[in-house]
Figure 1: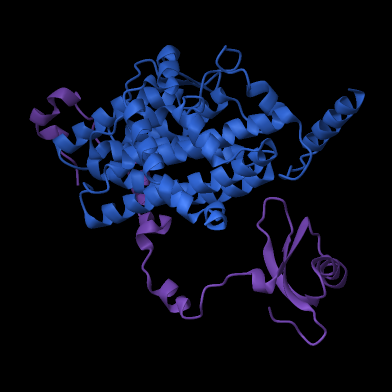
Figure 2: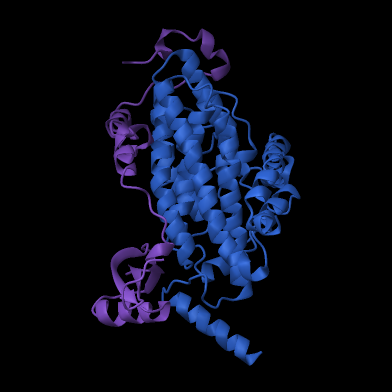
Length: 121
Length: 314
């Protein structure tokens, strides 16, 4: 464990501004123990903010991804997981709202349904 | 006793002020029990819900659809994991964890959602699940988002975001089939007919029936903010028009919106059938439970090897 000359540890501070929000990283500070870290976070740096909760975590307790991972995260195409890939649907629904598709015929006989069942585009 | 009443009154006052409850806050035992019941059922249902859909991963019609449905299955599994963690924080003071939830599931003490007891025999079923089953789920979950228990609300924020993708994926499948050949259109109509009864019972019975004993208490505690019937009405308002715009025929001859009462009228679903299904007597209940238990049993040695307890005793 890394300590500075005073024997203090680095702590990362996370705070939440609303019960429905996640805790977000704010800054780091040096403190001799977790209780002091929490007090310092509260009294020195978060005096002004409306805070619902504070977490302090000793930095060496955090396991981090490596800088080299960054490139890999960026390289992967995730578009097939994204809602945005289906943005054309809004127009489709607008179209069918004003001009619905013809009713689907009795499904049991649909395999032999006549031409009027075919799609219109 | 007076102290307990006092505490209970203070808790209720907090809820009434719109405050949120955290895992480490004091809460009435019954509030905890209702949350565990709801969140464990939701989490386990997410996991059981991957079983009908994963059947379609190897059979998806295009590579893009395969990637998308695989992503959806992964998301649902992830939702289950998030929710089980929320449940475990509530279970901790009772000395229980996810092992107990799975044991309860296998023993029939913990139910999973009625829709996941149903078969998905065609690709159109995969579409209807994405569009309408996830569509129904989002109606419930958007309501639960504003509930009083903050950890559940935070998990739901993430979940609802991803469900948005699932619905678009499902809509896209259904639109393609509806625009397709007569056989594809008939397949979609068949799937809708198969799923409609399960969608109508999805939200549970009206309040005041013997099947809905918890609704009132849960409303008071803001564990939920709308009744089952309000949710069903919302679902119908949201989806009936679009379903019909694709040429689909909803298998309920009396379904209509009454302009004066602003309510949907519909054929009363078969609640006895609903009850049979959620008590694991649905068409696929046993097969799905068997699969889940098989995975659970076959994975046991992995959990044991990775367990800290194992390392200590080694």
